[in-house]
Structures are given as structure tokens and as C-alpha cells.
Length: 140
Image 1: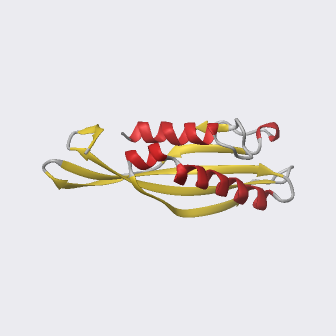
Image 2 (image 1 turned 90 degrees about the horizontal axis):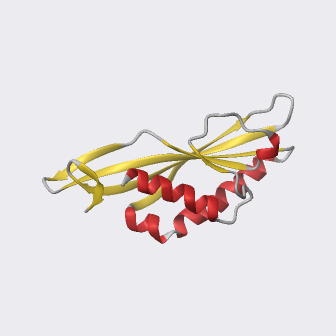
């Protein structure tokens, strides 16, 4: 179920209408060139879980969206890009059906400027998933 949700998050952002266009990546480690910005990088984060009953477990899947932009107004650009991505995720019926309570936990701004002005906003999300014990692929 975790991978299904992560794949759906990536697909929704890739197909959606954002300033990143087709520059939406999943777990990319390589540096981004100026010609690839604006961009979004989706990455799974640390997650936890609890046993509810002998028939079910509740897990909190956490993931990050890193929105990147260049230029003097990079902070405004990454904020707008994040808001576009946020709206797409909250409106997606498939994500809502696979997990419950998708919420934004925090955001962090970083200036990545060296020779060029650029920066990033990393938004951390969490969604609850109810699954059968021992089988994370089947929702309860």
C-alpha cells in the first residue's frame, strides 16, 4: 500500500497542472540544473505504525515534496509551486481512498544559491493507512 500511494502521488503531480510541468521526479538524488527548474522531487520519509487489533494495523506514511525554483523571486515561486501540488494531492480521490487524513506537517525553506539565485521548499506530509497485520499491500 505504501508504494501504491507513493506512485500515485508522483503520478498526480506529473499529470497535474503545476509550474514544474514534467519536471516531477521520484527520489532523485542528482543535482538539478537551471534548465530543469521549476521542479518537484517526491521522496518517502520515515514512517511508523501501531497495532490496533489482531485484524488491523495503522501506519503513518510520511513523504516529502521538495519544490525547487531559480531566480530572484525563488521563494515566491516555490511557495506557489507547493500550493499547486498541495491542491492536486488533496483533490485526488485515489489517494483519499487508499489512505486517510492526508495532512501537511511542516515546511522548510532553503536558499541553495551559490553562483545563481535558487532555493527550495521542502514540505513534509503524512497519511494514515489501515492494513492487515503482516500484509501492507491490503487495506482494511
